[in-house]
Image (tube, rainbow, N blue to C red; front, side, top):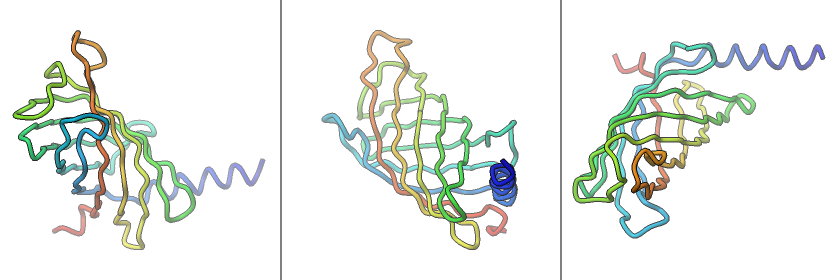
Length: 158
């Protein structure tokens, strides 16, 4: 019991040490269908917390002119000192451009991320996310995206 309480305290201490991040990445859009494209994204991850969640927001664009702006929450789960597993959820607005029609302008992004945290608190990670309108439209094909990204501590930019 004492070891569990100490481990939980250690997890909280690690979480409080992390700064805000500027995250950039690229990936493969529409893994399971025929509208595959390159994906690029930029995000701001806040260092503040809403209970145990960190707010974040970003923009994503694809090589076939699709665009998605979003804001949501994420939960960092520390697996030791270096590895961080992060489930995320973000609603946003989507424009399909010349790419895949996802059925609605309102889309929801649910993601799983695994990242390695360096000594300077920067992170290198991979994510997979699902983007769909959660059946608020009759047309809800959804898409999956695999990305690689780098999170740079925001306080080191200036």
